[in-house]
Image 1 (cartoon, rainbow, N blue to C red):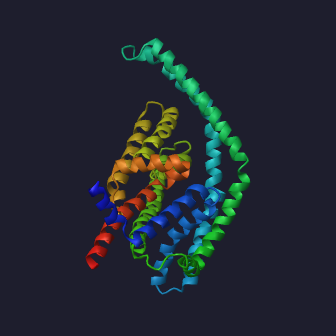
Image 2: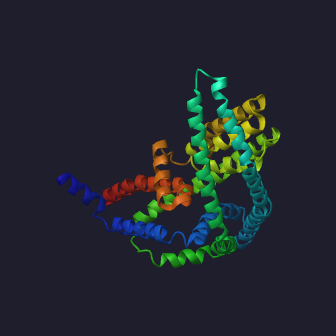
Image 3: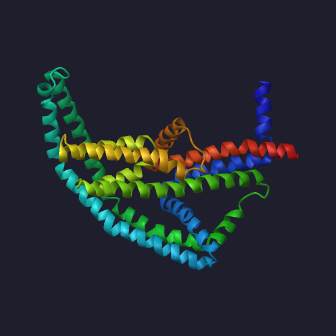
Length: 355
């Protein structure tokens, strides 16, 4: 009991620790309970945070901030319009084509399963094949009903999506242009004696900034290389599959495994057991190996490495709280927690030595 009391006093008998904990509680409370209605604002904060690093680099080249903001914002809007008016329609078209092809794929797949006892009698029996066929049909039927429900609910969210698309660039622009005024306004609510909180924030800022910038580059490189690969083999739904592959890097280990399934299925149904199928899967595997062993270490050399167990726990935890967005931001949030844990004892020890 004395050990616990001593630990508590050593770590929490400090006004700055109380300030830090209070700020963290307020931050997570706002995100948990107001995350959905404030999603345009929170997304704008992330985008502005990402674009700010580019603006800072332009300022180093002696460009006035307002000019740097205009240049970066125009590039951002151009890319956004490109995604909305070219990439998004192609993605929607390929998704529609894939949905129309699903009955054909299902029929081909079930026929393949039915022939397994004939082709591999020592491995699978007729009864096992029949049971597997029934299970697949049932699962796909339930999946189709779920997709239909999601599609209908998404139809009624079109207005919300439109508002999101319009509001986000506006918010990003004003956050970049009026950064100093906005930060000064928030500073009014921060207690003066916040040395610990500011010290931890600097480390969190460095870690998350490096992570976000690295992930954006990784998504672009992996998606582009995968798209080129699929185009070379004339694989159907190449943009859709390459986009999924690019964004799969947001969820290490799990994302790559999940995206492999649709790539393998589309390749199999298009080429069958052929050299093209084997070449696509081997090339895709090489891309994943290069991403994990070359690209990631190069991009994230300055970022604290999270253990795979910590990453999976973060995905499960934050995904369970916030759904898709929790999974999307699981690694940055885990990085933030890791940075706080790493900086906290150091700062407390430094304060103790100074005292």
